[in-house]
Image (cartoon, rainbow, N blue to C red; front, side, top):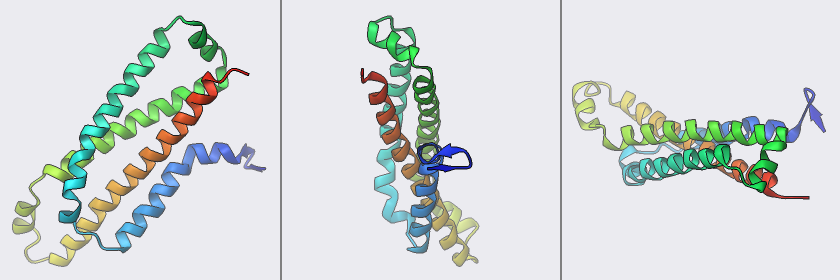
Length: 161
């Protein structure tokens, strides 16, 4: 089946993570999360994101510089290899963005912000908290979805028919 001339798999790979991220972040926004309940979880994300970021860059270096038979075979499959590189780049960018954003949420002094700006507008602070957590959920879901597709593409590349 094709949509706008592209297969369904193309649309899932291209926008699936964004779509699921948007759906789940909207759900989280409607559930009214409090930032203080998420702080401990969010503090672990920069470490995980940076580890995956480093692993992915190392892995790309190995693939691009490698001369083994399997790596040469992977490079010869142009369409799959380009999908692999595209997903790799996107995951690296989402990983670093998620890590920096999580670090900001986890360690920024929001008490100062509440006391200096939101004292008269406490209802605005509630909306800001919901937005902060919703963006975090959006980035996390997008990242996880794309990592799963990256793994699928990797196995398609190394599978020899």
